[in-house]
Length: 277
Image (cartoon, rainbow, N blue to C red):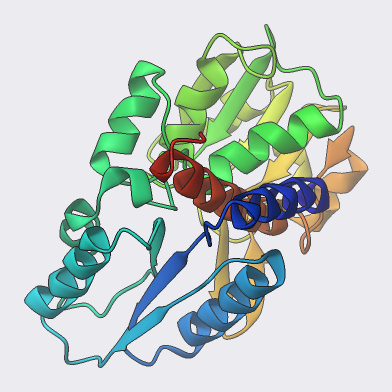
Protein backbone atom coordinates (compact mmCIF):
# COMPACT_ATOMS: atom_id res chain seq x y z
CA UNK A 1 0.00 0.00 0.00
CA UNK A 2 2.84 2.37 0.86
CA UNK A 3 4.47 1.66 -2.50
CA UNK A 4 1.23 2.53 -4.30
CA UNK A 5 0.88 5.82 -2.41
CA UNK A 6 4.51 6.74 -3.09
CA UNK A 7 4.05 5.96 -6.79
CA UNK A 8 1.13 8.40 -6.84
CA UNK A 9 3.24 10.99 -5.03
CA UNK A 10 6.05 10.54 -7.58
CA UNK A 11 3.63 11.22 -10.43
CA UNK A 12 2.21 14.29 -8.69
CA UNK A 13 5.70 15.65 -8.02
CA UNK A 14 6.59 15.14 -11.69
CA UNK A 15 3.46 17.01 -12.75
CA UNK A 16 4.39 19.96 -10.55
CA UNK A 17 7.96 20.00 -11.80
CA UNK A 18 6.64 19.98 -15.37
CA UNK A 19 5.06 23.39 -14.73
CA UNK A 20 8.14 24.77 -12.98
CA UNK A 21 7.22 24.04 -9.36
CA UNK A 22 9.71 22.13 -7.22
CA UNK A 23 7.81 20.64 -4.26
CA UNK A 24 9.81 21.41 -1.14
CA UNK A 25 9.73 19.62 2.21
CA UNK A 26 11.89 21.36 4.81
CA UNK A 27 13.08 19.52 7.92
CA UNK A 28 14.15 20.83 11.31
CA UNK A 29 16.18 18.88 13.87
CA UNK A 30 17.20 20.12 17.31
CA UNK A 31 20.03 18.33 19.10
CA UNK A 32 21.96 15.12 18.50
CA UNK A 33 19.56 12.28 19.29
CA UNK A 34 20.87 9.35 17.24
CA UNK A 35 17.45 7.98 16.33
CA UNK A 36 16.20 11.41 15.22
CA UNK A 37 19.32 12.00 13.15
CA UNK A 38 18.70 8.66 11.46
CA UNK A 39 15.02 9.41 10.81
CA UNK A 40 15.85 12.75 9.20
CA UNK A 41 18.49 11.08 7.04
CA UNK A 42 15.97 8.49 5.83
CA UNK A 43 13.27 11.08 5.16
CA UNK A 44 15.69 13.33 3.28
CA UNK A 45 16.83 10.43 1.13
CA UNK A 46 13.23 9.43 0.42
CA UNK A 47 12.37 13.05 -0.43
CA UNK A 48 15.17 13.17 -2.99
CA UNK A 49 14.06 9.86 -4.54
CA UNK A 50 10.52 11.22 -4.94
CA UNK A 51 11.69 14.48 -6.49
CA UNK A 52 11.29 16.87 -3.57
CA UNK A 53 13.75 19.56 -2.60
CA UNK A 54 14.53 19.06 1.08
CA UNK A 55 16.31 21.94 2.83
CA UNK A 56 17.37 21.06 6.36
CA UNK A 57 18.11 23.14 9.44
CA UNK A 58 19.87 21.51 12.37
CA UNK A 59 19.94 23.46 15.61
CA UNK A 60 22.22 22.62 18.55
CA UNK A 61 20.75 20.95 21.60
CA UNK A 62 21.23 24.25 23.44
CA UNK A 63 18.90 26.12 21.07
CA UNK A 64 16.21 28.23 22.72
CA UNK A 65 12.50 28.24 22.01
CA UNK A 66 13.00 31.57 20.25
CA UNK A 67 15.70 30.04 18.03
CA UNK A 68 13.34 27.28 16.95
CA UNK A 69 10.44 29.66 16.35
CA UNK A 70 12.70 31.89 14.26
CA UNK A 71 13.55 28.99 11.93
CA UNK A 72 9.88 28.07 11.55
CA UNK A 73 8.83 31.65 10.83
CA UNK A 74 11.55 31.87 8.18
CA UNK A 75 10.08 28.79 6.49
CA UNK A 76 6.59 30.30 6.75
CA UNK A 77 7.84 33.39 4.96
CA UNK A 78 9.56 31.44 2.17
CA UNK A 79 7.06 30.87 -0.64
CA UNK A 80 9.33 28.15 -2.02
CA UNK A 81 8.85 25.98 1.07
CA UNK A 82 5.57 24.11 0.87
CA UNK A 83 5.79 21.68 3.79
CA UNK A 84 7.73 21.55 7.05
CA UNK A 85 8.63 18.68 9.36
CA UNK A 86 9.83 19.36 12.91
CA UNK A 87 11.46 16.15 14.11
CA UNK A 88 10.03 14.91 17.39
CA UNK A 89 11.12 14.69 20.17
CA UNK A 90 12.86 17.99 20.80
CA UNK A 91 15.16 18.47 23.83
CA UNK A 92 13.32 18.58 27.14
CA UNK A 93 13.71 22.31 27.69
CA UNK A 94 11.77 23.06 24.50
CA UNK A 95 8.00 22.97 23.98
CA UNK A 96 7.20 21.03 20.81
CA UNK A 97 3.53 22.04 20.80
CA UNK A 98 4.37 25.74 21.04
CA UNK A 99 6.79 25.35 18.15
CA UNK A 100 4.24 23.48 16.05
CA UNK A 101 1.74 26.29 16.60
CA UNK A 102 4.20 28.68 14.93
CA UNK A 103 3.88 26.85 11.61
CA UNK A 104 1.50 27.77 8.84
CA UNK A 105 -1.13 25.00 9.31
CA UNK A 106 -1.14 24.27 5.57
CA UNK A 107 2.57 23.42 5.67
CA UNK A 108 2.25 21.10 8.68
CA UNK A 109 3.26 17.80 7.09
CA UNK A 110 2.51 15.78 10.25
CA UNK A 111 -1.08 17.02 10.40
CA UNK A 112 -0.69 17.77 14.11
CA UNK A 113 -1.10 21.56 14.17
CA UNK A 114 -4.02 22.60 16.43
CA UNK A 115 -5.83 24.04 13.40
CA UNK A 116 -5.48 20.76 11.51
CA UNK A 117 -6.70 18.76 14.48
CA UNK A 118 -9.70 21.08 14.58
CA UNK A 119 -10.27 20.54 10.86
CA UNK A 120 -10.21 16.80 11.46
CA UNK A 121 -12.73 17.08 14.32
CA UNK A 122 -15.06 19.09 12.09
CA UNK A 123 -14.55 16.95 8.99
CA UNK A 124 -12.97 19.81 7.04
CA UNK A 125 -10.19 19.37 4.44
CA UNK A 126 -6.63 19.65 5.69
CA UNK A 127 -3.45 17.66 6.33
CA UNK A 128 -4.31 14.48 8.24
CA UNK A 129 -2.17 12.94 11.00
CA UNK A 130 0.01 10.47 9.14
CA UNK A 131 -0.32 7.28 11.19
CA UNK A 132 -4.13 7.41 11.51
CA UNK A 133 -4.52 8.21 7.80
CA UNK A 134 -2.16 5.38 6.95
CA UNK A 135 -4.16 2.91 9.05
CA UNK A 136 -7.42 3.85 7.32
CA UNK A 137 -5.75 3.48 3.92
CA UNK A 138 -4.16 0.17 4.94
CA UNK A 139 -7.53 -1.32 5.93
CA UNK A 140 -9.09 -0.11 2.67
CA UNK A 141 -6.21 -1.44 0.57
CA UNK A 142 -6.60 -4.93 2.02
CA UNK A 143 -10.38 -4.90 1.62
CA UNK A 144 -11.16 -4.89 5.33
CA UNK A 145 -14.72 -3.59 5.74
CA UNK A 146 -14.89 -0.81 8.33
CA UNK A 147 -18.29 0.84 7.84
CA UNK A 148 -20.76 -0.25 10.48
CA UNK A 149 -18.28 -2.48 12.30
CA UNK A 150 -17.03 -2.22 15.87
CA UNK A 151 -13.56 -0.72 16.10
CA UNK A 152 -11.76 -0.50 19.43
CA UNK A 153 -8.73 1.76 19.77
CA UNK A 154 -6.54 0.97 22.78
CA UNK A 155 -4.82 4.29 23.47
CA UNK A 156 -5.86 7.94 23.52
CA UNK A 157 -2.68 9.75 22.48
CA UNK A 158 -2.82 12.93 20.40
CA UNK A 159 -0.76 11.44 17.56
CA UNK A 160 -2.72 8.22 17.05
CA UNK A 161 -5.56 7.12 19.32
CA UNK A 162 -7.67 10.26 19.41
CA UNK A 163 -7.30 11.34 15.77
CA UNK A 164 -7.81 7.77 14.53
CA UNK A 165 -11.07 7.52 16.46
CA UNK A 166 -12.30 10.73 14.84
CA UNK A 167 -11.17 9.62 11.40
CA UNK A 168 -12.80 6.17 11.47
CA UNK A 169 -16.08 7.54 12.85
CA UNK A 170 -16.53 9.96 9.92
CA UNK A 171 -19.15 9.23 7.27
CA UNK A 172 -17.07 7.81 4.44
CA UNK A 173 -17.00 4.38 2.73
CA UNK A 174 -13.64 3.50 4.30
CA UNK A 175 -14.73 4.69 7.77
CA UNK A 176 -18.23 5.13 9.28
CA UNK A 177 -17.47 2.70 12.12
CA UNK A 178 -18.71 2.39 15.69
CA UNK A 179 -15.51 3.44 17.47
CA UNK A 180 -14.69 2.91 21.15
CA UNK A 181 -11.56 4.40 22.70
CA UNK A 182 -10.14 2.73 25.83
CA UNK A 183 -6.80 3.08 27.58
CA UNK A 184 -4.69 1.70 30.37
CA UNK A 185 -6.57 3.86 32.87
CA UNK A 186 -9.59 1.62 32.28
CA UNK A 187 -9.14 -1.34 34.63
CA UNK A 188 -11.15 -3.78 32.50
CA UNK A 189 -9.98 -2.62 29.07
CA UNK A 190 -9.77 -6.24 27.77
CA UNK A 191 -13.57 -6.43 28.05
CA UNK A 192 -13.70 -3.91 25.20
CA UNK A 193 -10.88 -5.26 23.05
CA UNK A 194 -12.32 -8.82 23.12
CA UNK A 195 -15.46 -7.65 21.38
CA UNK A 196 -13.70 -5.62 18.66
CA UNK A 197 -14.02 -6.67 15.04
CA UNK A 198 -11.07 -4.36 14.35
CA UNK A 199 -8.60 -3.71 17.17
CA UNK A 200 -5.99 -0.98 16.91
CA UNK A 201 -3.29 -1.01 19.58
CA UNK A 202 -2.01 2.50 20.21
CA UNK A 203 -0.98 2.45 23.87
CA UNK A 204 2.80 2.54 23.54
CA UNK A 205 3.11 -0.31 26.06
CA UNK A 206 5.19 -3.20 24.68
CA UNK A 207 3.32 -6.50 24.57
CA UNK A 208 0.17 -5.17 26.20
CA UNK A 209 -2.11 -6.95 23.71
CA UNK A 210 -1.98 -10.73 24.03
CA UNK A 211 -4.07 -13.47 22.43
CA UNK A 212 -6.57 -13.55 25.29
CA UNK A 213 -7.38 -9.89 24.61
CA UNK A 214 -8.32 -10.48 20.96
CA UNK A 215 -11.62 -11.66 19.53
CA UNK A 216 -10.98 -14.75 17.36
CA UNK A 217 -10.86 -13.72 13.71
CA UNK A 218 -10.52 -10.00 14.46
CA UNK A 219 -8.34 -7.66 12.42
CA UNK A 220 -5.47 -6.43 14.62
CA UNK A 221 -3.43 -3.34 13.79
CA UNK A 222 -0.30 -2.64 15.84
CA UNK A 223 0.12 1.13 15.86
CA UNK A 224 1.82 1.72 19.21
CA UNK A 225 5.54 1.04 19.63
CA UNK A 226 8.46 1.88 21.85
CA UNK A 227 12.15 1.46 21.23
CA UNK A 228 14.84 -0.20 23.33
CA UNK A 229 17.91 1.22 21.64
CA UNK A 230 17.24 0.39 18.00
CA UNK A 231 14.93 -2.54 18.73
CA UNK A 232 11.26 -1.91 18.03
CA UNK A 233 8.91 -3.12 20.78
CA UNK A 234 5.29 -3.27 19.56
CA UNK A 235 2.10 -3.14 21.61
CA UNK A 236 0.86 -6.35 20.01
CA UNK A 237 2.56 -9.57 21.06
CA UNK A 238 3.39 -11.66 18.00
CA UNK A 239 1.51 -14.63 19.47
CA UNK A 240 -1.73 -12.77 18.66
CA UNK A 241 -1.30 -13.96 15.07
CA UNK A 242 -2.63 -17.36 16.17
CA UNK A 243 -5.99 -15.78 17.08
CA UNK A 244 -6.39 -12.86 14.67
CA UNK A 245 -7.97 -13.16 11.25
CA UNK A 246 -5.49 -10.58 9.94
CA UNK A 247 -2.66 -8.77 11.69
CA UNK A 248 0.04 -6.24 10.83
CA UNK A 249 3.63 -7.49 11.05
CA UNK A 250 5.96 -6.28 13.79
CA UNK A 251 8.21 -4.63 11.20
CA UNK A 252 6.94 -3.26 7.90
CA UNK A 253 3.34 -2.69 8.96
CA UNK A 254 2.12 0.73 10.02
CA UNK A 255 5.56 2.40 9.78
CA UNK A 256 5.80 2.47 5.96
CA UNK A 257 2.22 3.70 5.61
CA UNK A 258 2.97 6.57 8.00
CA UNK A 259 5.93 7.66 5.86
CA UNK A 260 3.85 7.40 2.69
CA UNK A 261 1.16 9.63 4.16
CA UNK A 262 3.76 12.17 5.24
CA UNK A 263 4.89 12.57 1.63
CA UNK A 264 1.29 12.63 0.42
CA UNK A 265 0.69 15.55 2.80
CA UNK A 266 3.83 17.24 1.48
CA UNK A 267 2.89 17.03 -2.19
CA UNK A 268 -0.65 18.18 -1.45
CA UNK A 269 0.76 21.18 0.42
CA UNK A 270 2.71 22.09 -2.72
CA UNK A 271 -0.40 21.63 -4.87
CA UNK A 272 -2.44 23.91 -2.62
CA UNK A 273 0.28 26.54 -2.57
CA UNK A 274 0.22 26.87 -6.36
CA UNK A 275 -3.53 26.50 -6.78
CA UNK A 276 -3.47 22.96 -8.12
CA UNK A 277 -4.86 21.17 -5.05
